[in-house]
Amino acid sequence: MSVDTASMTQVFARPRSLTGARSTYCPGCHHGILTRIIGQTIDELGIAERTIGIAPVGCSVFAYLWYRCDALQVAHGRASAVATGVKRARPDSIVFSYQGDGDFASIGTAESIHAANRGESITVIFVNNQIYGMTGGEMAPTTLVHQLTTTSPLGRDPRSTGYPIRFSEIIAQLEAPVYVTRQALYDTRRILDCTKAIKKAFQNQVEGKGYSLVEVLSTCPTNWHMSPLQSNEHVANTVTKVFPLGDLVNKGA
Amino acid sequence: MAERLLLRGNEVIAESAIRAGCQCYFAYPITPQGELVEYMARHMPRIGRTFVQAESEVAAINMVYGAAAAGVRTMTSSSSPGISLKQEGISYLAGSNLPAVIVNVVRGGPGLGNIAPAQCDYFQAVKGGGHGDYHMIVLGPSTVPEAGELTMLAFDLADRYRTPVMILADGLLGQMMEPVTLPDPIDPATLPPKSWAATGAKGRNPNIILSFDLSPENLKQMNLALQARYDEIRAHEIRYEETETADADILLVAYGSTARIAKTTVNMARAEGIRLGLFRPITLWPYPYDALRAAAERVHTVLTVEMSAGQMWEDVRLAVAERAKTPFYGELGGVVPTPKGILSEVKKHVR
Image 1 (cartoon, rainbow over the protein chains, first blue to last red):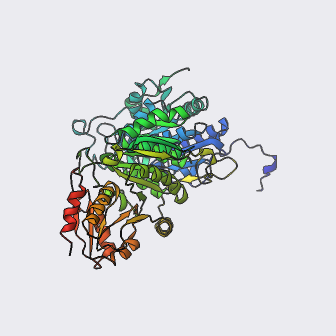
Image 2: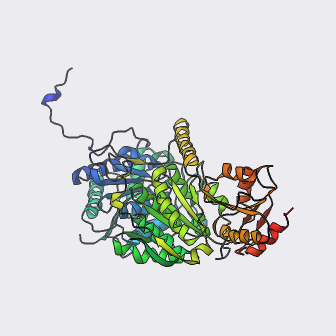
């Protein structure tokens, strides 16, 4: 059967700000959805020609491949410090860092907190999947109590490893940040909410308002040993109990 | 108009960086280079440039990475323990072909050591203190005016070769005051554009700054390109100074503050009829092996003097090999050798 595409109306397309390079993410993981949301946001705000992305170390180490904008790949945990350097050198640019929970909330703790505390005019996307995906499913600072990982094979024991760190709540204690929010992507409604949050976080920077952080609860079907569907349900029913969704700081809302 | 001022080494390095067009400076306070940070805090914002007191040395060097990637002249400074923390970032700068200037006002070590002058970070500076097969250009000023000149040069070399450049000073040089004539400032707007930098992909394909490639064959090519650049630097940028070497029987080899002290020893020795010369490497990487080898052909003894347990001594022995005796005299822990002390070492080798 032949299809007459000429008479069809295009209702959906890849954002112009995404390159279409083949994804390195596992099936069912939310990084892909989030990447698309960011690409779409860059399109909608018309900022592709002045956006500079910061790719971390972790599953999203290849983030510089997905976006049609200038980008840096940087040392593990240092993305917020590097973003500071870029933004200070080029105040007219739109700088965003894309960081996992190991990067942002463990090895980069100092850089993450102090960039926020200085109120750097940057947008930080913090992807929290409660595990170290790329290195093989080790424990993250955000790993849930009793969660099995390759370095907590009997489950995370809070007596020796503490509790999942609510890093966005720590950032929210600071004076400078203008927007701190926690979002998820496990169903259509959350995806739409998250899209709005990401747009706001970029819009704040376009308007020179200051530091914005969007934490996004993501899945890791591969290392959680769950199907993508089970993973979504796990986020909805369990993860959000530990990491509640919603705005923590929203100045000038 | 060139200005003549009385300034401390740390301040001369800071002022020279400003005059070289350094637009972003990031650092964490540490002695004995506190005046450098404070000078930048006073002067950079006044002329519309960036000063950030970073939360750590690690953060500072990564801010440098960001600013360098964004195409501006940028610098950080610290002293030994802080420079150890910067090694990860220096490796990334080298791997990502980013120009930046790093100042190490060396103090006594290891560990917390003390805040007195030392040269115990030579290995770390010239052999690659971080991970991976890289070098950076290392400049060893011997006087306060030279610290200024080499700072200006450091920014040019960093840009020309897209490499980190280190000023390897010491606590003595940082704290000492001398009259200096400062050159006219460079307007950053007049510097050659950096077409590779991350400035926003307007009317061009995106620029990607990275030190990463999972393919061994590709990473090998990235490494070979680095090595080719190092060969180019070795061919064009070796700098050294010879004092009274033409008729010398004994040669001192020293750099930085120690070289300056050794120069006095040369004069004292000459007054006593001892034919002593001084070979002073200015670039510590690339090291002036060939020039030192040639100088060693004419003497019977090459005495290395350092404020370390014999770090540069290894490079001296590589250069001189069996051409002459290669004894060593070092002071440790922040103790500074005296001209007299060096002379009595020299006298042990007079034939």
